[in-house]
Image (cartoon, rainbow, N blue to C red; front, side, top):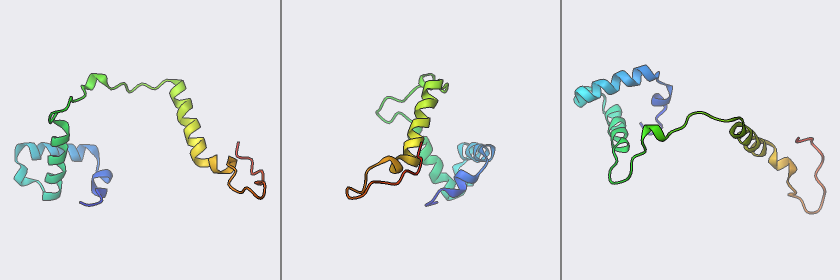
Amino acid sequence: MKDFSHVFNAHPSYIESIYKNYQKNPAEVDQEWRLFFEGFDFASQSNGHAAPSEASFDTSFSTKEFGVLSIIHGFRSRGHLLSTTNPIMARRDRAPH
């Protein structure tokens, strides 16, 4: 389970069913899944730190937040075209806008 690819490729209902089996009897679950769920349970415990409540998560995004994400994506994908990386020669205009 070094790459966790089977976790990311599995359907959420399948993972939930394995987790329910793990909660009933951890010995029945495959060792890799058991280690994964042990880490999941450890992370969900407060373990001395303030655990975030589920009410504190706001899943709604405003149009301004999507605009900021669009700007960030634009700089990540085309920012190198706007930069001055060669001090000797001017960069060709590749229309990054």
